[in-house]
Amino acid sequence: MYKLLATIKKETTILLRDQFGLAILFLMPIVLIIVMTFVQDAAFSSINEKGVKIVLVDNDQDSLGVAIKRGLKSTDLVELSDSIDGKLATEESALSAIKNGAFLLGVVIPKNATNNIRHSVDGLIQSTLGNEVSNQSLSDSVEIKIIIDPIAKNTIIEGVLSNLREFISGIKTKVMFETFSEQIAEVIPDQENKPQNTYEKSQIITYKKQFASSFEHHKVPTAVQHNVPAWTIFAMFFIVVSLVANIMNEKKEGSVFRLKTVPSSYLTLIMGKVTVFVVICTLQFFSMMLIGIYVLPMIGLDALDLGGNMLGVTLLAISTSFAATGFGVLVGTFAKSQQQGAILGSLLVLLLSAFGGIWVPTYVMPGSMRMISELSPMNWSLSGFYDLFLKGADTIDILWNCLKLMLFFILTTGMAIRMNVLKR
Image 1 (cartoon, rainbow, N blue to C red):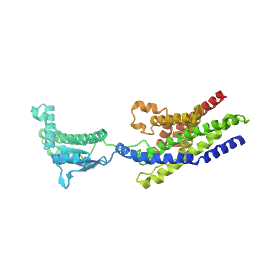
Image 2 (cartoon, rainbow, N blue to C red; image 1 turned 90 degrees about the vertical axis):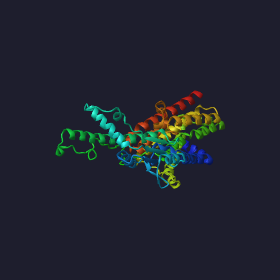
Image 3 (cartoon, rainbow, N blue to C red; image 1 turned 60 degrees about the horizontal axis):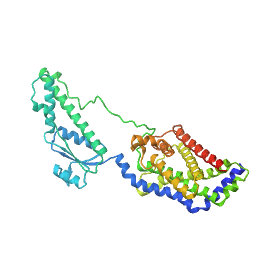
Image 4 (cartoon, one colour; image 1 turned 60 degrees about the vertical axis):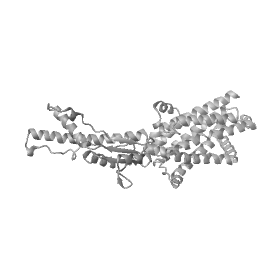
């Protein structure tokens, strides 16, 4: 124990002497978090898109137009307007306004759209009952024009089209019910037993949203919820540069050879180094969490929500610190020069972060990339923080993530010790 404490003291003294390098370890993630959160804020807003500006041109002025207008106004997806500069919107003015960037989409409902639906449904019912129907009645259709700003994402367009299909289907069902009721009334002219239009009063199928989360209110992955833990993990693994410099300085100054003469195992010496850098990484993590909670709201971004399970957050942060430190020790032991170690370590961190969902969340990656991301220790850590921050996971739910990170630490540290033994 005395030898381990002496090694820890030696590593702490060396680290504190390099005050500039120590400052970089804490300043770099702060800059990364602020810059990347600002850069990706718009991207995350589009993923959780709300308030898409749409102009409605209702030339129908009947049931279909009313249903579409009411339906679009009832959804958070849309910020609907039917006027432009105080005047009722027309197809021409809507096209001009969308070109100028005032709206993202325009919906143009043609004249007599509701009547065409009625004729089409009536022809369908008459045909079903075996009555003779003109081809015109069966071919009546409604063409709703969607005017699209070229910058609009396909996800937004499909979301609006999905809503429109739902509203039109509802109107068609309503018209079919009314028409069918009228046909029955003609066959059985008993007004007392005439079917009542209860379509709008009772829906057979209703929908209820339930999110796979322990939180009472659903949380969406905002730019802050992603970038703060993501770039903190990136910075923790980037400690490889400092570890490489530390190990290379020992080799350059010859202290590593003197340490081998000390009556102590290499494991004790390496664990002293690991202990110091694990503490630094853990301090990095919680410092960045405080930045996310208190500093980001001051510059107009959302505040970071840690989810409330601080035990789970702490365990995962410490496990990530061990994994990052073990990775740094392995690279430092393998490298033959500081330049080689710094370049190799930086490149590997960049690759692991790209695969692990640090730059782009894994849920927007293609399927093949998501499979590869499972191999990155950064992904194990980030997935755990997602579970804690967004899903309200219990500590037991992220133990597997912690175990994988600790196994990664044992593997990398064991490989470093093995390399050192072979070099003797």
